[in-house]
Image (cartoon, rainbow, N blue to C red; front, side, top):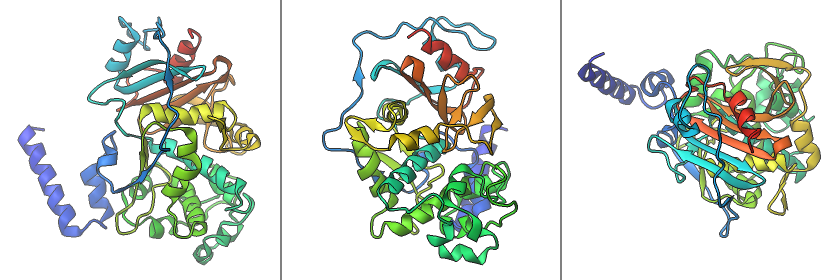
Length: 376
């Protein structure tokens, strides 16, 4: 399409958006289209403050001289060249809690807040674990209607538990690959939309990846926080204790409603994203703070018998109970976001890799992370 025509179309879509109002979800989908790493700039957001004296990742004196430099079909002069040629914008490697390799491309820097997309679900799961430990939430076995009573109007929700939502085995009829996924992401009223889906399968018997499950957990948590926002609670109970280097943010549905996108709106620097991997690597304790109890972490990383093996862009992987994927060989686990965002943990090497990009490129990323870990 000629550049002038494309610009004209964007102006037309912008006018359509204004005419129909921000509440017209399909106009927003057409206008914003595929999410990119610029996503934090298009949404209202709430700041997540770190500690006054954060404990940052220490940098090893000498950089790791990685030798691996091949993608599926091409060889490169260096790992950095491979990364840059395959849509990577941020890449770091951590070994024994030390930063051993770090690269940024395409205008991204160590200060850039990078959208976690669906890695946000793993942060959300951690916060749910913390809330349970503190008694803010009663039990994973509690029905969601105990916390969100208006869901009783939808048949079947009285049988849906918090754990079933967390494991995405609730039976909710939500097809992530249809327009439902985009509509949830771009809508300006998550309260209304997340409570609008029917139950299709008996709760507890059928796995279906669906972001709405995690957003309903936000509803349950939000009701118990009183005047505090979910972002403030996360900052106090997880982000500051992790020792994050910089403030993060959580994208909202709109400034008017102020609902955090619990399923896909968390934004942080690449270095600080690595802390989530380190938290689970160290079984819930980091910087002297027990943020999650060990049993929660182990349950999170154990295979989910209902979900079993699932097919993703990385091929066949196993699904953990609480928002982690597991490699079939058992060597690693990872949190993953749209378009190839990864927090990848290799326990046997005491290693964490973080990769953010604008697509997958021509790389089998889990295979590359494992190969790199063998060099550490």
